[in-house]
Image (cartoon, rainbow, N blue to C red):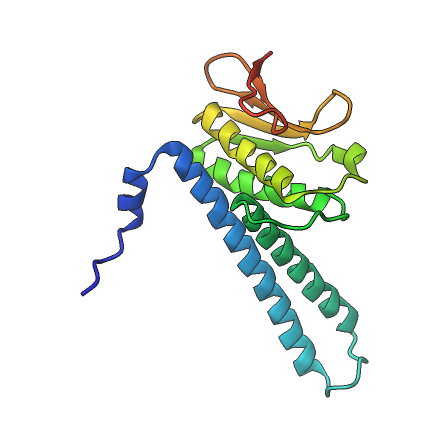
Length: 195
């Protein structure tokens, strides 16, 4: 006979706040991947039911196909981030980093809501448009965000923005409710420069 699964309260009571933040981020990535696949499946079901197979004359054809592609892209980016966070070897992508950064921001926003931390994503990574993203880099951006949320604590604030240094890269401004603001730089492990 197998032992019963621990409840969510049992799991959270036995894990550290940092582990909770990482688990929350991973769960949000799984949720986004499943949501993207569900959106794509629903769009394709609606498309299939709207016309006899072989004709593309339904007025909503373009919208439904676009919706399915958006869902699949969201699912693919989320699974890519899950793999990166798990240190699985992935090929370097020549796609823009911006959609993956938006996904990371969405994951961290959800984690911040649960931790009672204010989150802001400036979306100012325009200088990084041609930047490619490697799995390790995405994993470090996500992990640094979870670290920033943990360091901000309840009532604190975290802002994901582009650095002022050259070359442009992403950093987190962290403002705990009590104490001095500082920067967490995903490119510099252990960074927490007080401003």
